[in-house]
Image (cartoon, rainbow, N blue to C red; front, side, top):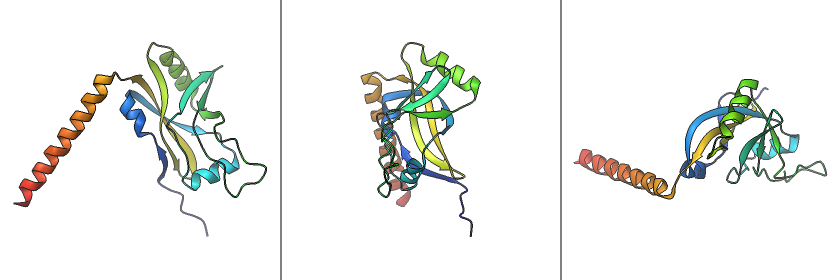
Length: 157
């Protein structure tokens, strides 16, 4: 019997990236993985916190992402923090390379997930936030939460 592989299954998300960066544009990229990496991801184990992407000699690479070794693996296990190739269209790679060379721009991974059984990563072209921007974002989020709580309390009466 065939497995149902449709839909999007989230493996890991990088909440810290949205806190530390202004997200300008996002891309969905495929990943070149080994067998034990796929099995570790299917077990739901990965960390994007220290990850970033770079363009080297016309190829996009994902670096610093931690996919732990597969516990059932043998001597064929992978290195947890190895560079992984990103699968993007040529024009997307050229655009990422051009934009990331601008001052203050970087490429960060936002989410790692499966779509129709294939591993994908959502990467973003981002600008670093200043400390006061981070505080402003936190304050806005807190105010929205308080407003929602007040409105729900009002509706209950």
